[in-house]
Length: 207
Ligand code: FES
Image (cartoon, rainbow, N blue to C red; front, top):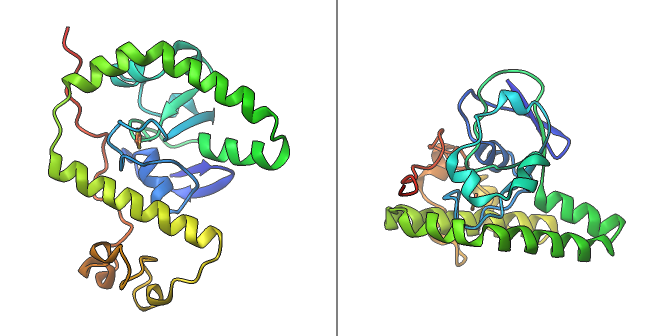
């Protein structure tokens, strides 16, 4: 099946998270927490095919305001592709980029709006995060990988050459500060393939 992210069409598997599809294809999307539903930078707006995605979960409801949900906002790390069909989303960071390029003054309104929406959900967000149980090692690994991927995307976007990346094709500088990310999986071609196909395991909010 196919999914359109920021106007680019990508292959996707049933049950795959929107975040993983975007990351595998180096689409412009936020994921500072590595896909663990903490950073809330992975917002996407669904333009088409909302009914083909996983239903909005209680976790997403705790993190997204009602008005964002009504606008079609989902969290890419908590949303999976469930059925084939026409699915199209635009990421929040892509929206911001387009605003910056085309109508920078709108950014002030946008930042104000997102700040207000975050404030509305702040109590629910705090309650949710306080009740979650994290696998700390996995979390740290996800965050480091997320930062590494994001940095690589930025370097590519501003066209800074990545000298040692050519040897393995993973895009991670083998001799730089991200050396731990350049591992055996680079040579075997697994780098960039997300192993997790479902939403992050999240402890439900206590009743
Ligand atoms: S909340 Fe961080 S990637 Fe979704």
